[in-house]
Length: 185
Image (cartoon, rainbow, N blue to C red):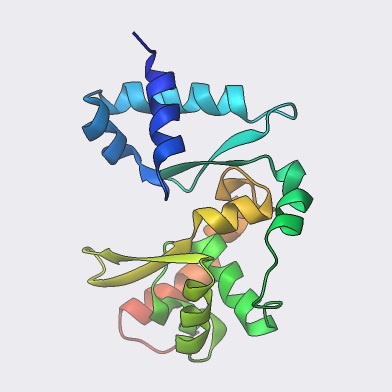
């Protein structure tokens, strides 16, 4: 009988999009602890210099991807027809990467301008994901698995200065002010 790691690897290979831990638990009939442990073991086995396949995650979602060191091969195979990102798009993407999941009003409060078209563009390019957040009562945006893969990282926490920027006191104060209905700081 195949191991849990083998079963998870098969599920991830067959999936056309990132799979959540809860979806894997449901499909495998395993506990969350066992699935998480198997994912971490699989990531340790796959995320090596000698493996063409790596395992990435954005928190709840996991996906098999190509080794980031082989990115040039992918670029040669698939040409990007959309061109480069604009500076405002890069700013919004950076906010989402470091602060996500984050709402549109939070992004706009940090940037100081309307971000509707930028978010639409980033969604169309597949660089961000939009999900409903029942606690916030609106959509939240986070970095997509494709963006994580493109950046050549396995987890958003690998971004430079992630911890410092993810919980920045000035930004927290600004967002707290926003949620309380106050003015920007």
